[in-house]
Amino acid sequence: MKLGRSEGSKLAVAIMALLVPLGLVALPDALPVANAGILEKVSQAIGGDGKNYFVKNHIDKGLQAKSATGGSRKEWLLVWAGDENIADTAVKKVRTLLPGGLSVDVPTLVKDVNNALPGPDFLAVIDATKGSPTYGKVVNTATVGPLVENEPHHMQYIWHKGDKIFAGGLFSAATYAFDVKKLPELSISGISLPTNTLGGSVPDAYWTLKDGTAYGTYMGGPVAPGPHLYADGQTHISNGFAGSPGEVVRLDGNAKNLGEFPAAKHGEDTSECVNLPALVETTCANPHGIQVREDLNRMVTSDYAEPRNIILDPVKAPSPFLRRPTVRTWDISDRAHPKLLTVSTLPKGPRSQKDDPLRNENRAVMETTVTNLPDHKGAFAETMAGGAIYYTPDITAAEPQWREVFDDTAAAKKLGADQFPAGNDGGGWVQTSLDDKYLYHAVVGRPAGVYGPDDKGSPGYIVNLDIQKLLASGNSPQCNISEIDEITAGGKESDCPAVAGIQPIQGGPHWGTLDNFKLGEDGFYHEITPGPDAHVSRIATSNYFVARTGIDGDHKVCILDVDPKGGLSLDTKFVDENHGTPCVEFNRQSWPHGNFGNAKPHSELFVVADEDIK
Image 1 (cartoon, rainbow, N blue to C red):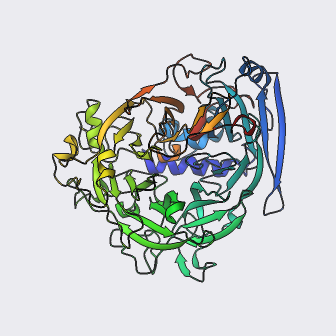
Image 2: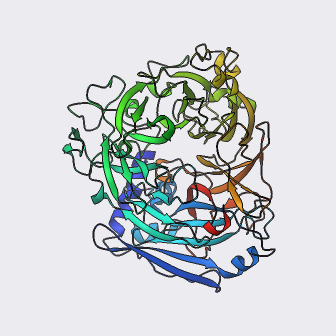
Image 3: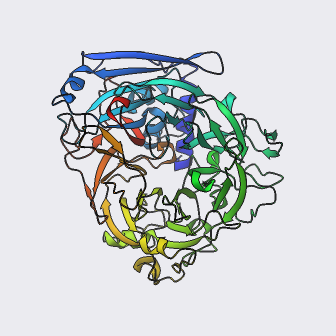
């Protein structure tokens, strides 16, 4: 019996579930460390269940000392990474291991699958100081525990001095809060457990506010199915953990729950959405991306998918309508009580197909980003399955009007791709530059064969779009990708975004972050604040999505330089310490915390210690 992708994935997860209670998966506290000169420091916080949760630093004393050579202050790249183990790698092995059917030889499976035993998840602290003797070296791995299999996912999009770092576990439904004042050492400030957020599950992304709190999107439904009463008095019926509807949670700096707010809206248009199991009142509310304009008192969230029903098979889910086409705006005038205002269904584009809605441009709205300057009120949204970018000029409008302004096919064309369109290409991170001149976008790329045996797939890359004319059009943008020839040539209107720079990334980038710091003449780092001259000279990106969906990546973290005109180039000095090749490899045997093998880097942030920034 041959196993398809879905069956193989399910089996891998089922095997993990069997191994742990059978005692066949030990969780070793300490394998031999790769460097004897490791400084270990532990911090703890009490969870809502009364148990201790910890961060254990493993600082390479030799690298730390070498990095201090010259006395220059340091900038760090923090990468939230998960341990790779059997539940990730068995999907690729299961067909060869089970040639005769579904009988499972557990010892053979554990022996033959790479990185079989679960190890600790961690924040990697990498020297990101240009010119440093340890540039690109992993100086510390801060492991978390006792939870394993968090599936580390997103943090906030950008870090500001004084912020805690909020980091979510996709599978554990936990949110960690980290203190980074003393980098390369960090500590745990608190943790939010599933029992602390009964109205939502599957945390995704975070946005920090000036008061030190954060909003987080919880993509999945309440922990228990059935009616759920929220603090604002609303009641919504859910189909349970990792289902629908999701919510927005407000957290303090210790990850304490300050309020839960339903993303569902009674009476919203759900003609393009389904829920499994079906709900009495269908909802598309599965918030993923989140960004805020505090000066406008607005928040924007984007709905991606009902998570549990696509995690095992991202291409052939039970229904294409499990992937959401919706974006939501919120009034945050009262920071403690965000109020959902609008639910917008993004329009279809010129290559939408009735017989295969999963190819429609508006499918799976993974990310959104706001503009930064006071004169701009617009926002962008991008679709992971749809392969398109949308724009609205005013998120304060009673009903924001969204239009397609770019098709990823036009970017793939720049790289010589001859397979079109670029739908189902895995678009992810999207972020406006701090001067509102450019829009950065990460695309994993489409595997060959998704659209049939003749489909060669599409490439992975980071693209930088010039959006100056679009934003200059104010409330009357003309750009609208409405004709089929525009998907490859770009929009016909003069204010459509144009490709300013593009960098192919082998392995497929999913996420990224801006370096919002510069070294001043006083020897201290200073934050680059949004403004017309706020040029960001580099970005970082990671090549990993979620292995158990079948979209894995090559587990590298890269830095790209950005020139003043938006051009992109790979930083060839940010190299792996073991191979000497560009980008830092997370597929390695040894880490400061021990010989735990490959790791999965999902998100990253540029951060500076308190003593080094003014």
